[in-house]
Structure formats: structure tokens, C-alpha cells
Length: 266
Image 1 (cartoon, rainbow, N blue to C red):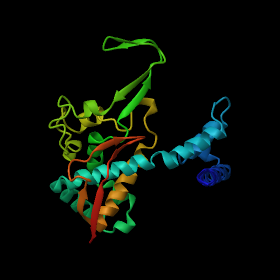
Image 2 (cartoon, rainbow, N blue to C red; image 1 turned 120 degrees about the vertical axis):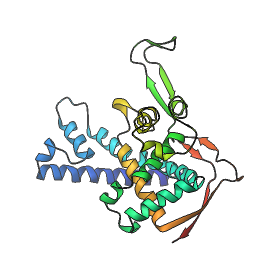
Image 3 (tube, rainbow, N blue to C red; image 1 turned 60 degrees about the horizontal axis):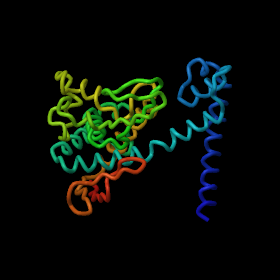
């Protein structure tokens, strides 16, 4: 029964994706200018698929749509969980970000893009959370030719697993590296430990040509969810099962173990 339920769910998802693609093709047929300047990622992928010898087919397009819909769900949810945990453990930071949200976006039920864009400290809190608790803490890279790393021979085709948090909590790159300090993302005057250094070192979305294509969507979702939560509720507690430090569990993503939260509506 569970397998049949899964098959039905997958069929529904595939049907919806096919509908998204059909709607996009209809828009592009009605407005040919979209092929020159696509309005979104789906339209860009369809345009690429239509190019001769592009190597992109409808199956690839559908797979990428599925990735955009589902791949960021657990990563975003776990980032929000870690963020709430860290904010509750840092009351002054929580008070500051709550004040920003309630000042810049007083109606949490009707957020606008302009209001979200003004939540600089909230964004800094999200980035600092991902520096300390990256839910995808490893970045696998494949050597495309024979090379050496720190004197170790790495043949072409070898997978090299990079631990992203190693440098993110290294005092060579960050002052007081284990502290939850969102201000470091806003301080552009400190070239060694300020915002520019943080953005170079912390790579929660990867880097290079294979950087996560959904990084801006993920950050927007995090900011919107937190703005709605902080605008409507006070966080009374975020607890662990034993009352101590939250344990990290690595499955598909790095999740906090057994967090419970108590909210009070404003």
C-alpha cells in the first residue's frame, strides 16, 4: 500500500510539472520575445532545450523543475530550525532582529518584496546560521585531471569531499569564530574578519559553476518565513531533549535532534 501511495504521489507531481512546462511553452509561443529574454529559470531551460545540439531535452527540463520544487525543502526547513535555536540562545540578537522585522514589515500577513529587501539584519542572521550550521556541510568535487592536494596525489575521476565548516569556524578567517554574531556580515570595514571575508570563506551553497541555482530562492524563503514568525509570535523557548546543546544528526542534511519550540502569539 505504501508503494502504491508513493506511485500515486509521484504521478501527481509529474502531472503538475508537465502542466508548468506546458504553460511556459504557451507563454513563450504567445510572446516570442521570451526566447530572447526568458522571464524565469523554466523559460530559460525550455529555450536551451530548443537549441540545436543543446544536449537538453524535456526530461532534463522536468528533472530540473522537480529539483527546484523539492530539493530545497528539507535544507530550508532545517536552516530555519537551526536559526531559531541560535536566536533563542542569543537574546540580544533575537531582540534586535525582532525589532527590525516589526519596524520594517509590521503586517506579517502581507509582506512585500520591498519590505523583505529592507531586512538586512535578518538576512545576516540567516547567513550566520548557515556559517555555523550548514545543513549541507560537505561539497563533493571530482578531479577532472591528475593533480595533487597538500602533497597527496589525486588521479582524474577521484571524488574529493570538502568539509565546508572547517574554514567557517577557523579563527584565521573569523574573529571569535564559534560565536553567533550576525553583525560580521554587515561590517564592511574589516577586510580580515568582516562581511567581505565571510562571503569569501563561508560557502553554504557551494561555489563556482556548480553553485546552487536555488540559493536566492532559499534565502528569500528563509527571510519570509522568519519575518512572518517573528512578526506574529514571541519565541518563548527552543529546547533540546536533554536541555543541553542541540546535537547534530547527519542524514541527507545536517539536522538538529529533537528540538521543541514554544511560541506565544502577540
